[in-house]
Length: 387
Length: 136
Image (cartoon, rainbow over all chains, first blue to last red; front, side, top):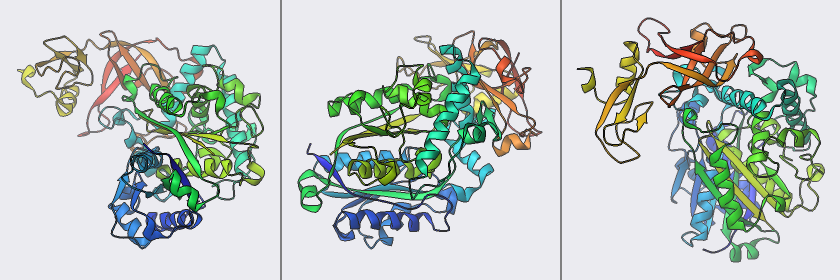
C-alpha cells in the first residue's frame, strides 16, 4: 500500500438550505477540487455518503447525479450508507482504493438534507438506524439509547445523575463556544448550563441542548497518492491510520456504556499509525448527544472509563486544553447533516493541521483524529491524519 | 402444530399476537436466540426449534422518552406523557428491547436497574402489530 494524502477539502454552510442534496454536494466538491489545484476531469471515482436521500427528496442514484452535476458523468460512483458514519465510511474506502493504487484521485464526502424531513418524520427515519424489526415497535429512539447509556453510566461509576447532567451540559457549552468561531457551523451562539437545563426534556436525562440538531449540508475531500499530493500542494495532510468496525443490535450489546465497535476500530487506526491516544493533538468525535462525547473520549483512550465527564468539566477538552475535542463545534454546534458529518470532521482536521482555523485553531496541531458513530452503536469509523 | 411455523420475524410477531414470547433454539448445540434466528451462527446448524420464554426477566437498561417517533405520538404519548423503554434480561439469558410498563416514567431517578419484570403483549390499536412490553 502506498501513502495517501488529502489535498483539498470543501464544505457548505451547515443548517437549513433550499438546495438539493446534489446541489449541496457540488458546492462542497468544487471547493475541494479547486483547493486541490485540480479540475473535475482529474477525478477518477466518487464515493458519496448519504443516508436518507430517498426519504428527503424522493431521490436515489444520488452519486451518479452528483458526478454529472460537477461535469464528470462518466466515472464510477458509489453511494455509501453507514448511518451517521456514512461520510467517514466513504472516505475510508476512498483511502483504501487510492492506497492500493487502483485509483490515483478520488473525490469522497457526504451530503444530507436531514432538516428537510421535519422533526417527527426525521425521528422516524433516524430510528430506522436501529433494528427496525425488533426495536422500532418498542419506541426506542436515538436520544433514548443515550439516555439509557447515561443512566447505566451514572450507576456503574457511582456518579449522581445530577452531577452527570452537569458534565453533559459542559460538553454542550464547550462545543457551542467552539462553534462560534466556525464560519460554516449551523449554530454560532454561546450557551450556558442554564440553556441546557431550561430546554425541553427529550429522553430523560437528555434535554434538547444535550442533542445535536438535524442539519442540511455537504462536505467533500479529494484524496490522492502522497507523490501526487506533493506536486499539487505545499500542505498535504496524510492518512496515518484508519479503522472501522460494526456492532450488534442494541439488545445484544454487552455493555452500552462502552461501545465495543469503537474500541476495535480505534485500535485498528492506532496500530496502523503506530500511535496511541497520547499522540493525538486534537480530535473531532461523534457528539450526537452530550453523553456520546463523554463515552467517546473514554473509548478512544483520552480518559479512563468513568473519567470522561470530569475531563470535560476540568477544561481538558477545550481548545488549549490537554486534548481539544471538537474544536469545530462538533455535531452539537457545527451541525449534523448525517451523511456529511464524517467528511466535515475530516475538513476540520485538514484545516487544523494546516493551521487555517483562526480563533478556533489548536496551536501546533500535527496529528488529528476523527471518530464517527453510526446508528445505535452499530458501527464506528476512525481516521488518524498527520502532516 | 405451532412448532412447524417457519422460524422468522413474521412468525415471531404472529406468536406475540397469541401472547407468546418465542425464541428459537438449535437442536444440535442448544444455542438460544431471541429474536429468533433460523440458522445457528454458533454451530452453523439449520435444525432449529421454537421455544417459549417464561416471560420473566430483569430491567437491564431504561429510558423515559418525551419526544418519540410518530407511532408513539399516535399512541398518545408526548412531552407531558412520556413512555418508558428498556432492555430486559430474561431469566433464560437473552436480552430484548421492550416497552416498560408499571413504572412511573416521570420519575426516572427512582428507577432501579434489576427491577423484576414480566412480559405483556401490547396491541397499540385494532389491527396493528402486537409488540413486546414488560411490566413491573
